[in-house]
Amino acid sequence: MAKKPATVEKVIWAWEGKDKQGKRVIGEFAALTEIQVKAELRRLAITPIRIRKKRKPLLGGGAGIIPKDIAIFARQLSTMMTAGLPIVQALDIMSQSSEKKAMQELVTKVKGDVEGGMTLANALDQHRVYFDELFVNLVRAGEEAGALEAVLDRVATYKEKTESLKAKIKKAMTYPIAVLVVAFVVTAILLIFVIPQFKDLFSSFGADLPAFTLFVIGLSEAFQAYWWAIFGTIGGLIFTFVAVKRRSDAFNHFLDRLILRVPIFGPLMEKSAIARFARTLSTMFSAGVPLVEAMPPTAGATGNIVFRDAILKMRDMAASGSPLRLSMQQSGLFPVMVVQMVGIGEETGELDKMLGKVADMYEEEVDNMVDALSSLMEPMIMAFLGIVVGGLVVAMYLPIFKLGAVV
Image 1 (cartoon, one colour):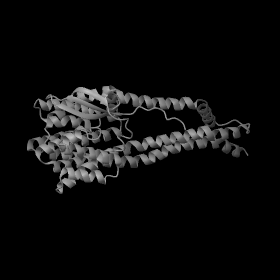
Image 2 (cartoon, rainbow, N blue to C red):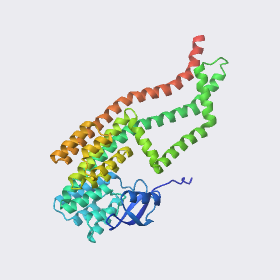
Image 3 (cartoon, helix red, strand yellow):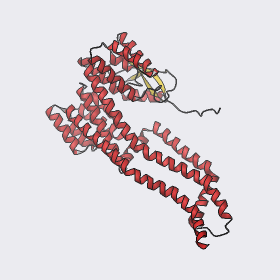
Image 4 (tube, one colour):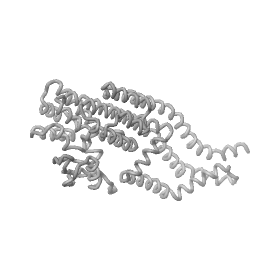
């Protein structure tokens, strides 16, 4: 059996450090290197004391645990606690009822930490691979306010909506890429295996071939001679792209800014980022998290570095007393209507509700754009495949048509 090539995978790192107040904090991160862990800790204003590898490389984002599982976890825990079950009993039931073994183990560890005297937020904070900063902060705010059930309900709703939004964006981006891959594979098969058969047939004609047919035959010969270079170049470009994207913040910033300028897809990604911004900030603000503290997790949730950097600058302005409306306006990334709605929310004291309405509106717009994009791309993709594959077929049959006309 052939040995699988080595791949660079994320490792779980256990870390210990001190926050701004000098309190000892611990947690876990999934990262490629210790340098990335230190960079993330600096972003969270945590001074690292000790960092060490904890487990083997992750497969598929964490031993089979996906964001949807975390959304279900929040929903189930919220439902059971609202029904009056103690948190330990609720976690015990969830650990036994989960279909995934990895999820059972995770919930069991959380239950053990809570039984040992930890708050739920601190117990979740031990597993940052699965429960991000936003999730932990919301739960901590709910515990401090004595409204954990309500906050968990908001967290569950937030997770469900954001995962739904991600699925729609993924659908819009994956479909054309998949079609391009299929078109390339089909074209490669025709050039390598089918067209050479026609070439042997044409050589017996002893007649001049059409220019289009000669061009396709030449393309087939080049593909057969240099297929290794073609596939190697494509593979190398993909590997380089992934490697640079993982390591270079400047490249990611350039890429995200470029994506926002691409026709059709740019507006889609922009609306998606605004929807995530509004949904995340609304959820955290309604849970009692102060605006300044809510901004960093919100920045990371947008999924776009351009918006992330702008929101972090907005956080600095908010910390100095500037209204959110003004900082959003100065960023130049938010439409006038969104800025106005946020301004009304600030003036009426209902910022969380106005942000929620903005999120609902933009999530609906993203949904409509994805549906419209799918309807638009289907005929375009069919036409593209017809031109590529049909062109090769026509090139091979042109000499036969010419011979038939002569006869």
